[in-house]
Length: 410
Image (cartoon, rainbow, N blue to C red; front, side, top):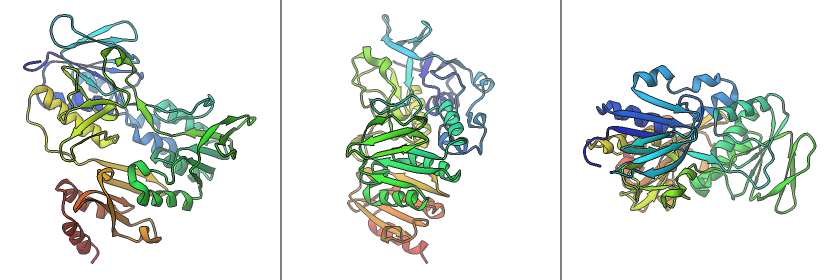
């Protein structure tokens, strides 16, 4: 593709898709934009689904990111309630044809894939067992929490912990079954994941780690899970939160290996597919700083990537590099994470005493990649965490990090 495209087709009407359309317009794009979404709703925010919507603090419509008239004002043509089912290259010239579930075809000069994840399920998972990904999922689970006295949560990651927190706020007895030694180990690592475990147990949750689910057994009106060791756990209801898989089945005919996501360059261009970009949960971008390929499955990353992709499509100057950021609200405090803990080899305490068995609240830790700061995580310590963002962005040294910690601790 040379010059600016005439028609950009964005497949996926979540945060990443919406922000891509908005960024294209803010960068001066005057051509056509089509936004395809499998759900019938206008774009809405997913983080509140396991937080304010689930607890009942928000009505579901408050999670909306853009009303239909706002999209119209933006000059975006929407195709909602329709899935992309196939992708073909143009027979004449560059670009693609996107086939939709109603048989219609959209012809694109530039394609942006932002279809996100679909939740993983367990073998033999019962129909009444909840997952949490869509607005309907959140409303259905909230209805269940209004009538049950006990809940099984399979998966102790951030979604599972937030569901557990919402249930405990209703005084529901909660059991969390986590297959790994500590919750949220992929996001936080084993040492800091142990703090996430303490939040659960100190919040009144019965946490079982190393709990490998073998299947479901008959439980009358409730749900019963059997573990690999034969132990059974029963409750009035259950929710499975064990991550997701990229929603990319519609690309099966392209020859791309998308089982773990769409491999992209550092500006979101898809490897092996011309005139195509990917953002959000489906995108695995090259990271030139760390020399690897990484997926940022976080709310802020989708918007950050959309800004990069929009400018790359238009051949404009890219925005400054963004630092990955994530947060989770559970048990009365906010967990915040800046940077990439997965590249670190050492965890150091910066504030608080959580790593030494003291209170979790107020604990801030640094993740060091050699002698450089790769990430910072904080538990109920927002005023500290924000001060480390520039240091993470600059890959500050251990000495610089410890000097800031000493200053803030005075």
